[in-house]
Length: 478
Image 1: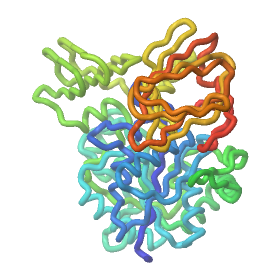
Image 2: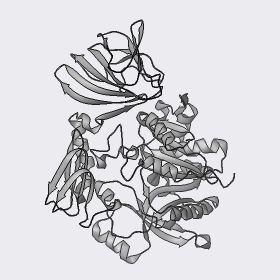
Image 3: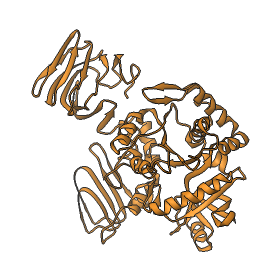
Image 4: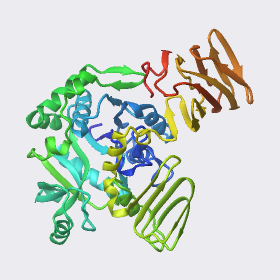
């Protein structure tokens, strides 16, 4: 078991530069952007070989916990620990928690730390790089993968190689370099010896903890306290909030890697991308003869170098060059391809204006299933609700709205007050304002129904939960 590696998947980001597809409650790592699987499913499947890897440890936002669990199960994967970050604190605190959790079982456990949203096309090269990194980690080095650059990229940080390590397995890291301008990036490419910083790491748990103690003791102290006071929650490990929020919000690179004398890199070419922007997604996906990437119901006439994606309706574009056009049910985004890195600023502006499109999709996922708003008007709202087999909404009531449910497919068990009713297809029931109620799917197929809400306030925070199998608090919208 000494050579078994513990994968750690970091899934805390919001992916705002891929808005409007990536949103706060359903970010890019949970989306199908490059194929039939989501990015986190692809990440976990890369380390699914039980002869080499333990079940992955996942560190995630609490809002995503059920969706991540469902997606991993749908991919046929049994995750290891699922740890919930109560607040966002960047990657240093997450790595410290992972090292502490692994060290409880084996202080010399080798960790492979990976963001949930990266693309790797050449899995053979990835496997070779992991083995080289594992050898260096056994020598008490903290190893990152340096991606051999094939173009003067300004969107990534760089690593400057230092002296070779033993047997030429890798290199010491001479310097971490921030994202350069184009002239500097071209110089790096011409000179050689510079690689893109992948943000993936391989190291022993005890070595990580030693370096945190030396260079980021406040991060380590907060992580240790948060883990020691963590609570089990429906199979998840919920880190203590008051302890975790004391951790400085800093990336692992800055907290440890730029300061330690144990940093090393393994250069590799493996078809890697962090899918950080629509431009990088355009570079990753197959292009037609004019350099276009067309996804969904799209017609493009005399266009070149464009990424055009429609998740909703026919989208027709004429004469565009080097543009990104993205259409969802509730938003349209158009930008020059090279400027899509600025979308984070746009999302911040939308948030400051209270726009829900930065947070919610038209389909909103819940632990019991999902719902989609079909239409919204003055004092009424119509939703399509899907409850997965075994799904059970909380026992709840609303102070400002009444509801009318009509079953479209499946069978619903409905509690209204003290009455429990089974509803089949085309049957309906009325839930008066203020009445205690619950919806359940006891069947083996999804339950689909139409909900018509009416009242003076229709917000999702008008929920008073009296009982909930998913341990959600009253007034929360998750």
